[in-house]
Length: 274
Ligand SMILES: [Zn+2]
Image (cartoon, rainbow, N blue to C red; front, side):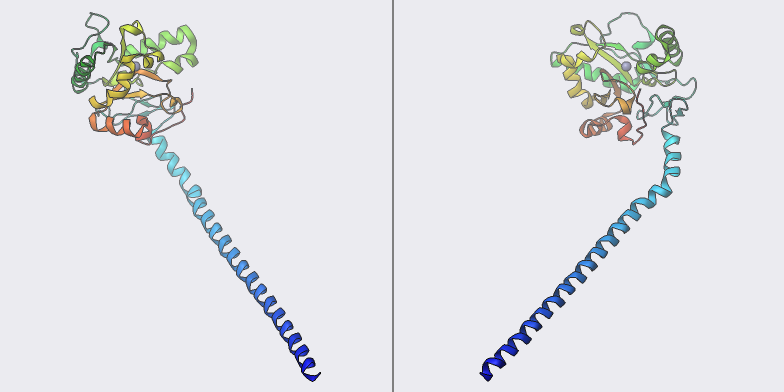
């Protein structure tokens, strides 16, 4: 009987002790959880703080830098490297007033017209590259035809003003560059077409053998398709599978592999929705 009593008392103590242990360990766990939560919250707060800090400090600086290189349609930036084959000219980046390339020549490739017009010209390096591109395309059985290369600022002015008279400025700005902002003024850009396209410059060019060949091979000769599909917000222009731009073989290869626009490559994207 005594033994039994002792057992009962011991059990009660043990149970009570066990219970307490449990309570303690639960409390400890709770503390651990609280601590963990606090650590987590702290980390989250620190993370937020890290994210917030540059957002508070950088915008003005970043915006200023951005405006220096990107510009806006109403206040374009004048490029400081108009002679570079890597020059980025678009709706917000213009050539210096009256600028023209000094080394224009006529590439020896088929054009759709016979006259020696200004638009037959390209800068020397680009013209040589175009001849290489045409030779390779002809070897592959393609029949590309050149439509329009260099365009002077004064010619662009005339085209732009004619378009504004015909369809208003808003519509014109969607398809035509303002004077000083056409890539054709660089002497590094050219529009190509084919007999199958009846010499038209239209998006359906990409469905022709010539259009596909150009999209796949232009980079190997130093050219990029300057206004790719789905990049209108960045380039400011709808898809133009016919408009290629000489940037040199190394850069063309990089841009082709990256699958980006010239603006994205140089991190000069601005909001060019039009
Ligand atoms: Zn063009």
